[in-house]
Length: 340
Image (spheres, rainbow, N blue to C red):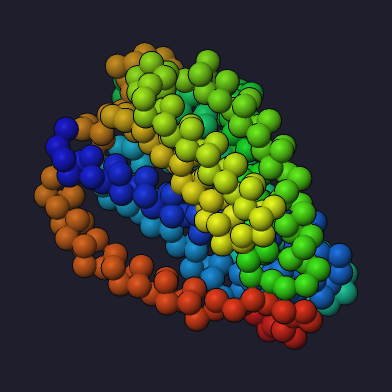
């Protein structure tokens, strides 16, 4: 296993972490439009907080998938074929969520309310199935010696993966609530903060259940005890820090901490899997490893050069975009947009 193979394993982890940090609050905002808002004007105010950035945030997921395809083709092949129906469900959720912004903006009355509801459903649907996918993956799937997955319904949906899906959905919802508190003024801001203050207690229960299942359903503690304990501890620390920040009305700290909670979750997954990229529940030797699932060193070297050149440009643009749209959304919200 070469250093450049490890580098690309880490880079894919960074891309998924960036996706959950940035697009995570988008999903939370979509759910909050149906739960926090008490009328259409407040729904407008909430949705306008992500109007300029939601589509750019989703590029992180596309980039992560593309990077996996180019750098670890065998990982990509096993994951995308074995999780075909799960990924199709995620894709349908992303499509519904994307078109709901446009159709909602061009509708009125009952149709507008319908698209708002679909936005909320799709915003919960996507992180739930992403959580199911990642958590069932670290539990181990029936992968044979040829890298083919022969999974049944209960390989995908079990207590561990369902708890993981619910936990990730709740994390994105809390991240969205913290973002709304950061980006709005008026009643919506206060309601979002109050919801977050209450729901973090629910999250604590979920984290305890998740940690117990992690101990008994995976080999993470046996393979990487220090790394697993550190990342789990970071998840708890960032969750508590975000919760305390909501009471102290430190909205920036609450938002950053809730985002870092999900970053720590991604770190835990990648630390526990290393040096594997897919874990076989049939036989340990059937697991896909970094060293035999990656592209050639020449391919990885060329990709690294491209990343070094273009990544700073992408990051600079992202920072600039958020800086341009840094102001809070007031009530009444901007008049109904003609698309986002």
